[in-house]
Length: 450
View 1 (cartoon, one colour):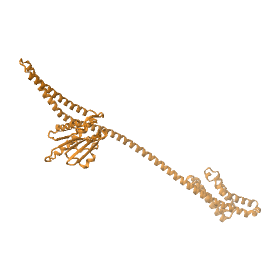
View 2 (tube, rainbow, N blue to C red):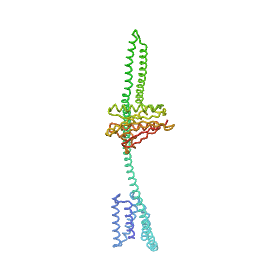
View 3 (cartoon, rainbow, N blue to C red):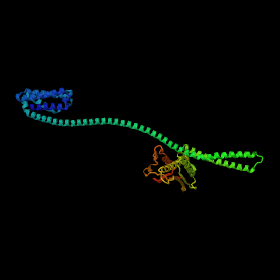
View 4 (cartoon, rainbow, N blue to C red):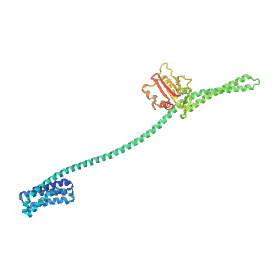
């Protein structure tokens, strides 16, 4: 009995301390439970050396007190199931001791049964203890698993907060970069518009210089024939005032006046067409096609480009060769745009020949040739060939790129060929092809559908 009671006390104290974690949660109860262990150890020693019946009842009171505390105290409610393990043993041992005290003879007749019952109740307690331990381990494992899951959830939540913060910062950064890119794009578009306008103004300046030279010739004729006509009129007046008038001379003077007026009219119209061409080139393109004579347009812009360059460089001189197909007919194009293309190609050709001339090559004569041909019933071809310095093979695939130029800084925007290519290919559905050999020649070919 004493050994069993001691084991029960030891089991209950260990079970309660482990299940409730009294050392951390209930320090006061933990000290009292340790005290109960010491009391149980003292009672066991007393039983061994004193062999007194008194200690037996102390064991009963200690066991009943512990079970009652476990069942009644609020802090011990989670371990109430300890009663299921130790209750049978306590009741059977208490019943046996009471029967032995009150009815000794009857106890002797049932003693064997009481001992067997105590043995089974002890086995029940041990089995329950093992099962409880197993359950506790399972519960502890589950608790640890839950803690790990909670820790993982906490880490995930923390990471989510960090990720949301990073995403918010990244979004803000991307928004800022987007706004900067939009601002940069706006500035680039404005710069591009300015450069395009500069290219147009540059071509207009070259055209104006050529026009100033071209228009000077018809104006000189107009002025000269006007002065001669004034002199003829004065002669006619003098002849009419004579008493002996020479009718033949008067007819001759009138014929000369008529011829002069025709020449004045012809050169006046020539000057008028040059001015109209300049105005047409300078105004914004309407993108409306008109049937025009490509031969006349090419010839006019060739000479305007040539004289424009000579206006800025008096030492420049070049041979102009033209081979125009008389059966070319009129082609439907946008005159302003086609004029810009031709002016750009002619200017580039003259520039290439001038650069080659500056190298001091012996017996070199700058030459620019313009050829027109009708290839078939649906396509015409215009070729501009120069014997200049040619285009290096390393940059040949870049010449149509916007802002790319082989000219020194300040002498070209890099938009001339790019705009020309777009005007021919996109604006007119044609082709702009280049053939070149460095140091020898460059030939641009325009093919247009009729």
